Length: 160
Length: 160
Length: 160
Length: 160
Image 1 (cartoon, rainbow over the protein chains, first blue to last red):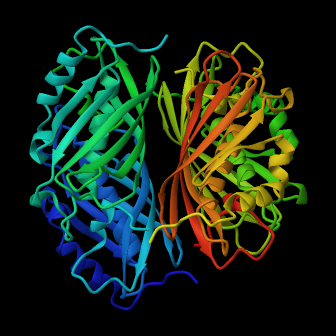
Image 2 (cartoon, each protein chain N blue to C red):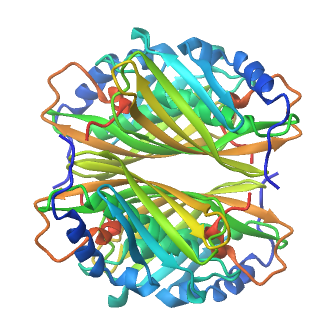
């Protein structure tokens, strides 16, 4: 029995995202939303840069991680939350341009585990360019949605 | 021909680390240093937390990434810099306590690629506890050390 | 400067594949070939199964690894060979059906490193089904093509 | 509540291993056993080699995968089986020598997920040499032990 989105999935994603201080800190926002496919947008700003003017890799990983978590969160029951078990990320090109967009997409919406891929593209300099790609395993925590928290708390560790 | 530390490896690591705004932003500092084994320490602060008071997973990944990059950087020639190609991270337990310590260790100091493992432990609540573990592939950029930059710029992408 | 296919890329791929005893052992063969996108097909046979009749995960990983290696090999100079640095694989569904098809695709054809993704689909039971997905980092060994060997020897270790 | 070994864990590991045709095919056998730490040994033979006389990378991954699965299996209840969710492997040196030994070790024995690391060493040419290292996520399938199967069926995919 695979996970499937609830009626209010988009509202739950927006509510949870609004409670993420870390996303606000770096200026990230939600982009296009579909069940199992959540985008995070990040306007490129100087304060996010490393020494060469590219966005810091840690920041690229943060928006990819978040896009993965919310893509998974969009297909779990209202009574569940999600937790990042692990991910792998390959960095393919410098993260520049005007905007970074992390496209999450659920590959396997399992009851206990949701497998998600994320592509991060940079936009604003001609063709969008693939900067990074991630494969992530997300755990569904059934019966743990009552607290005001979202998928981003996720990345702090599995209590599996 | 494998990489080997230069005489001034520790100075180069300290110089480079001091130029990392992102590390300063989160309050991270260098810990114990040995050739091929660099520690990053992070005092746990409220502003780094997600909703449950644990340190945000993105921040855990940032110090692990940095410990990996500097562990590699400590064994490359003075004329080289390093670049994160990819990593995988597993989150094992909530990142709490008073201090997080990311222990990097070079597994394979190749001429072109350096493979590094990192364990992140939380300290301050009894026994140190393993929070996360990372395997990272780092590329050595020979002949590219002249610019004032360090291994952290690394994570923005390989120009391989 | 990125890698680009030579004129005889397809011939070199076929020659190299023909020298892989391990692929012959499991009955794998080349499928559709394009520069940077090589498919490996594997007819599902009883002797490749584990206890439940599904194809053994190790065998699934072998064809994915091979599809990644040859996708990379198809875009490197004739004077180069390739070596698997590392990969991550997620298993998404039991590998059943009549045929497994591993679709490799180069994401980043760097001069030194080629990043490849692979999807393994099972065919023969209605819609093809995604069984596994892999992200792989391949190293290009310039000036080392003279020996009669192919990309599969690859996975035994980087001499980076 | 974490996983813990049953009294008959070693017997269950041996029974399950004996039912793995794939391990017999390549000549792999169990080495030292402890709860949460299972070794797989593989005598190096010509038929396992690729073109240069090193053991094929796919075979290295198979014994690492198996060491991970049995390390996890040794700490789950008798009524449970295990399934490989995903792994990452880095190849560090050619797999040569007389014997390969895959040392599995459980890092996190969760109730639902068990996280395992594996180091593969080659022995017989002086000091043992680290050939490959793996991080693996294993899922515990509670209430599914009645069938005669073992952890190796594991790698064919999660039914999470």
